[in-house]
Image 1: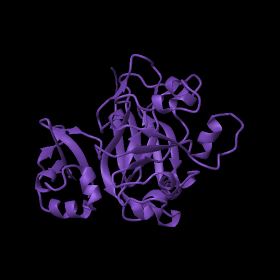
Image 2: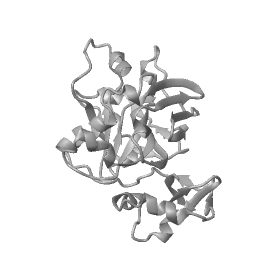
Image 3: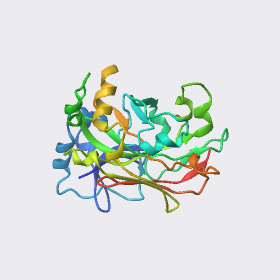
Length: 284
């Protein structure tokens, strides 16, 4: 059973995803106001129990999908994490010994089926399909061999990027990665129950139906277990934190000429075992 956060009639809910809509569960769990509180309490199995035998409360197309964990303490993204992505830079450098990291803020993401926003300051809005890992069990200096046991759930991310703004300064991409509504996350949380859900799964991105990105997590230079171990060395991970694990080659900036997103485009990010995240594009 998968779980999502959504807004209906100006009220935010979380609940279980059913065939025809959502089963609201948050009204029955007042001790857990948001999905982050559910994660902190290890409450996903309890939500599954509460949802059994319940009717849909909100049909599809009657609500807005929100990002699955709406108020994480931190979102940390891993850059250049596939071998072909490293080659895309054409700088002659071998793969680095350590991963590149940068933060994103929650308001830079929208939910499933909400359009990404292209700002007036630049037309260079690009897509990056990724898998996002939701931390369930916090910790500091987590051993790599134990790291996957700290995952509560998985979701999908379109880590939308304003390409010229990532080059505004030296050794800094933060301002190109954090425009309001420039990326997306969702649609839902898939509870993490076995290592095989992340160690080697297909990850694809399509733009207007055309396959642009296609790889497998087994080819990551820095697998998710190492990401958790490395990040937790310098900062304490807490339940609800999100690690966006890296995108394959094939983003729009790497075409000649570049193929940036324009209003009316549709981007679909797919990962086996998780589902598909779909978003359009509009001008601000």
